[in-house]
Image (cartoon, rainbow, N blue to C red; front, side):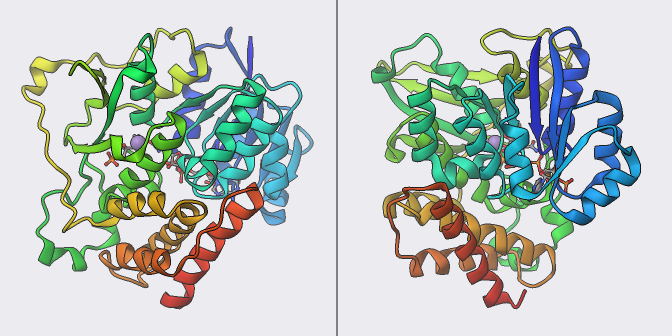
Length: 382
Ligand SMILES: NC(=O)C1=CN([C@@H]2O[C@H](COP(=O)(O)OP(=O)(O)OC[C@H]3O[C@@H](n4cnc5c(N)ncnc54)[C@H](OP(=O)(O)O)[C@@H]3O)[C@@H](O)[C@H]2O)C=CC1
Ligand SMILES: CC(=O)[C@@H](O)[C@H](O)COP(=O)(O)O
Ligand SMILES: [Mn+2]
């Protein structure tokens, strides 16, 4: 029996993870759940999965949850609460699926407590990838990618020699605006940017997919997860999201992982690794798909991904500042405080003004992200 804590249990990844867990009751038991403010969904999860401890983001949410579930569970609050859920003594595995930089608290706590981590929260790697990977290696703790591209790369690296890797190829759907002409982009509404063609995800990552910032953040994530020089990480637009990513080797061979676009695949792979679970997802039917397309990403219309390479070149706290700026800009866009095309411009301005420092602590990485976010909020009047 594997005992799991799920951080971000009320979100898109968290709900799908609980769906996987519920299909294999002899293999998984839920011991901790961490969420933000959605106490109605969390209360239902508490009733169904009976964790020992849960956490929520605020005192108000804790009162709301207590009113719904009474004394059925211990309720903790805030970042300290999600950290406690991620380091429960009885937990054998932590799924890190809180959105944004706030997710770093629980990821770092899990690694510190020497828990194997299933990492959906890419911002953890963007803010503090070098620190987290160093600490995980020192403790011998696996960080197993849940992000679909990184899960694909992890699977495509298995059984091969690392020095023989020539490059990583991250696929990108191109998002809901892939075919939209440049002149129309400033007028794109939040509703339009939130219509992802292939994946149903939280709002922040969906807007990031539309700007291609998601792919930029994933380049940074891959740089640290797989210890690969960013000059050997390429992005390839693939609108069908069937080839989840690829690894090219020095002999020219390319190993890829394919599957239907369903996050329960990579979630279950991380949960059960090194085994696989018999999931009954619809099979991949390539004859029905007919064709798979590939394109170069368009940096003129979607410059956000180029900022991630720049942040990696600047080094230190620059990726954290970029990530925080993006969180601020996406929130501003969704609140109607800036245009779609301002997101990349606001992020570029924060990066230009940022003076990078070497990342020596989680607190410093979080502070750099917060400063990036606040700089954007000041600019847009949030
Ligand atoms: N969705 C997907 O398919 C994919 C997601 N990812 C990554 O996984 C992470 C989660 O994404 P997704 O599930 O889509 O996001 P959602 O917005 O759907 O869910 C976010 C989760 O985090 C919780 N949360 C937010 N802020 C806090 C906080 N301060 N403290 C505690 N909990 C908090 C939310 O709680 P509540 O709702 O209760 O407020 C919710 O449970 C992101 O980093 C994303 O980039 C990666 C690949 C694919
Ligand atoms: C499912 C997943 O891993 C997301 O990160 C997804 O890749 C987003 O889609 P884009 O490829 O459009 O960024
Ligand atoms: Mn992804």
